[in-house]
Image (cartoon, rainbow, N blue to C red; front, side):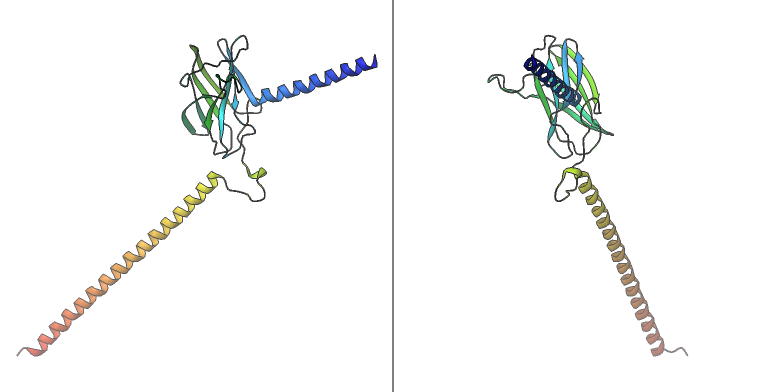
Length: 220
């Protein structure tokens, strides 16, 4: 009897752990429906970090929980946005090999590399076997990962982000432009000074010539 109780307790513990695992997976993706089809939408790789190759992932099943494996390249597209920036339309590729029967059936990914931290929005449009799809989802604690910076996981040297590099390059360009402007102004001042000096020499020479002529031909 004690063995049965122990086994029962173990079964309950395993069930609870499985429930927690499934819950954590559900949080990483948001579930939406388009007619009879269920779409699990999120990042291909999570946690999601700036500067790392990733992708918008969608896992599609029908009403009988069968994976959809015949989605054509142009059937479904996604536009990714963050802040006031927006990508073009990205297409999905299957993450499985239907002929070999390998890979997670029903999973499709649209490659993208996030370059700024923050919340991202996915806008999916198109159709699944003729069923229209128009779904917009945004990263949050209840949906899928917000994109994170990499500073907290870098070791031993902190590598600047692409945005930081771009900002530094912009500042350098601005300084170089300012230096070029200053040099150009100095060159202009030098030319003006040289011109004025030359004009002074010419005027002086002309005055000297006039004085000499006046000396040679005194008026009576």
